[in-house]
Length: 459
Image: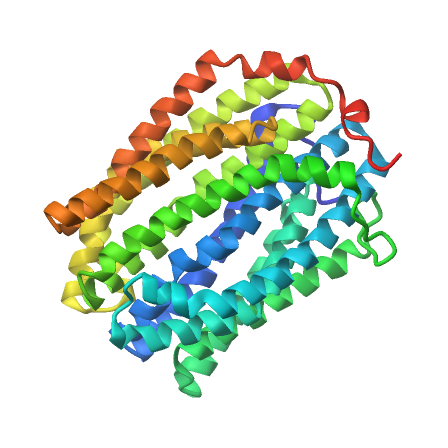
């Protein structure tokens, strides 16, 4: 076992989950700071239109990157199960398969992002005064998107084997680098939004290089080497079986958010900037919940691989209670401090008003969002990734898009647009709770074959 790893298979469940989740939490803090720096620097050094360009591209970036990011969850689940079962050969081949698939998908994503970004931004009704900057930011970002997917693949390998600390170290270095380069490229060299995107991809490249340098020198079965690269069909099939529904889930949610962003765009640059500022804060505020969800997926996967089903049930229960409690506290704090927090991104009265409005409509319902994320994490760790896909496809995509279309046609009221989020969170949480209580998901897992028979890793 790696020196930095947390043992999720033995000992106190609460302590193990918290120890594993804490570096994930801190890493996501730096990831969000990483993302927020572009908005803060551009908003203060360039202006409102540039801020709108950078922040409004977030939904589109997540749409294109989200599928691959979601699909990587299948990588983590398979590696974690093999690791929990003590099958070193399968761990090694799973890692080689994951890296090979990442290189292929990263090249495809670069081509798609650079080629289609301008077209999609026009479909989103991006205002003329914002469009040129948005296209420039997106094209530079996607020229370096391979660094992003490589780093995410490395993080999946580290986390699947219980190591959540090293990704944190690399993110701290990368975040500091991004901040310095943002200030240099945008503040000193006056490179505008292109400078902000360039700073991001260079910093991501550094984090990917550090992560793979360490993986190439790992002493366990998860070591990465050119010789170990492969595409093991049974393992790849299992990764895709679990990962593709998660990727589709991420993409359809992002698609729905693109539709919402398109609706917000119709209210002008100030609404775009305010909504974008909230999106940056939203990603930051919900870090404890997403970090704990990631920890839960790994915990569930490893313990299923080890056939320790009592620990799976206890860990899932603790995760849900802890996540919902954190979300309730965060919602209250951000509701009360909304004007001050939104004001960090610029002093435009219209942008601040829109951002505060979005904050106070959504944050009281963070508890519901935490419930959905928590149960979805358990489902993915258990290999039931289709369940979150169908629930979120129906509520966060189909219903949300339909709701936005009706609201825009009859009312064109930004308050009703923002209300789409808590309404759909409530629907998804109700469905997840029903599934969790009625589906007998754990009993069905116990009837499955162990990893040794389930995945034949090229034997």
